[in-house]
Length: 285
Image (cartoon, rainbow, N blue to C red; front, side, top):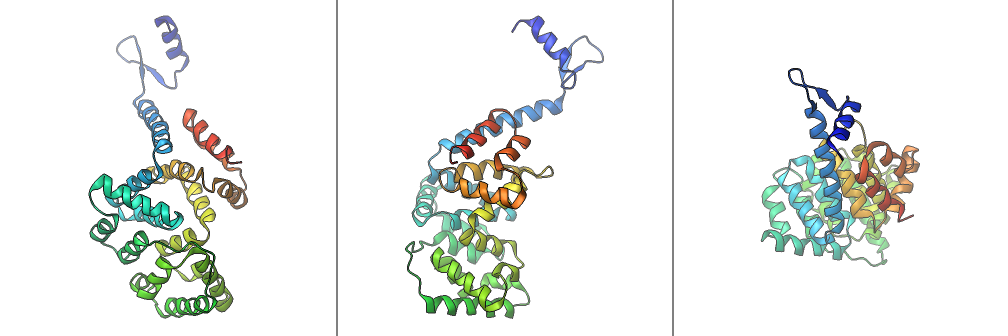
């Protein structure tokens, strides 16, 4: 593009370029420079994450969560509870290769809050993935959870209840779905309705209703007042679920929020970043 054309371009985009007060040239507004850089980084991030091996991607996300603030621990729950046993084991191997430490020991040493015992158990597990369910154990554990939850006025104590942690961290997902169903039949409400702590609710949703969980995360990520951590979840969810269950997530999103997921992405994202995300969603349809 010739210099005259560039001058014309700058003059025609006065919302981006300002006339300098003292000298005769058109200059960028600092806000727009920062905005453009951020958008380029979003596209870079989605391409890097998409091309990365899933084990490495999950390992790096786990490390980032541990390096962040306690609110980021929800990402550890997401990784531990929505991956298959082999996928989680692969992420643990990649974590050890990348950082020279096990994810279990890092969670145990870095997490200082009440969630530590549950998080260590979740990232350490290798769940049975068959369809076999022990009906006697299902009923016993549903009743056990109900009694334990309702016994504790302070629901935070549930994080340290060994039986609660054991059930959530070791039982297969089909078994847990049966437990939660039995819980509702026995106590006349969904188990998450009896829980106060976000970490426990997220654990439940990730284990038995991942499409609902991811739909909620996507909605938060695309709100106008979302912070940067929440916005990053848009890339994370679309990329990590594109080859898994993004079709189910898109259907759940449409049902929950009354808007097609691709339409919402087109409304809030820009340029190549937007096109990349929309393509990942549509290719699963």
